[in-house]
Length: 276
Image (cartoon, rainbow, N blue to C red):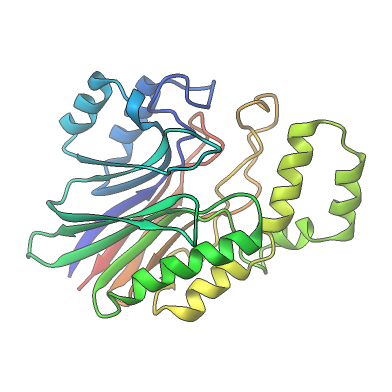
């Protein structure tokens, strides 16, 4: 039995100065990365890729990581991208299209100490509508199913909740809908409308129903707060789970934790996995 420590953490641009969050700097991002001490780290919203400072890249490599970067190619967020950091030797990387158009997702193939191949699928689905996410997750499922007998971990920001989560039920409720209509702050209204879409639950249900992957977090630990760029005054209370880790049958969870607020609206999520 082998052991793997994996992280998913939407860093809200922390690794590149001036990208999004105003609550943290690249120095803070590096200190969090060092504390996580994981083998594989998937970082949606790593920052604007072509503005990454060399000193930050050098610092990440000094922690033992190969830095694999992928811009989303999303016109709404020019230059913003995702990173997959690996302490395992990287064999190949593949960039895949999400749906018919729009942003991309990342597949990084690594080799462990026993020369076994591990497929790491890093995902950041669109945050606007559930119908768009359903189109996108179908392409993720296609890629995962190409490796149905292999060791696969798919993780990242899916912008989607489980339909039975208490917050998802609340977000779909009449009370939440009426509350949204009373709010006048444009950012809060936008966030509330997107959250109501995320609460549908069909994206997560589709992935689990159409692959052999299983949810590595049986506790459905909440990962996000409303304290984000433009809403820094909001409380840092965790509201919902939209960051996920799914694994093939080879993986079992030894430990699964969500860290405290580190300056992003998403908490770092770290899992220790055993696999054969």
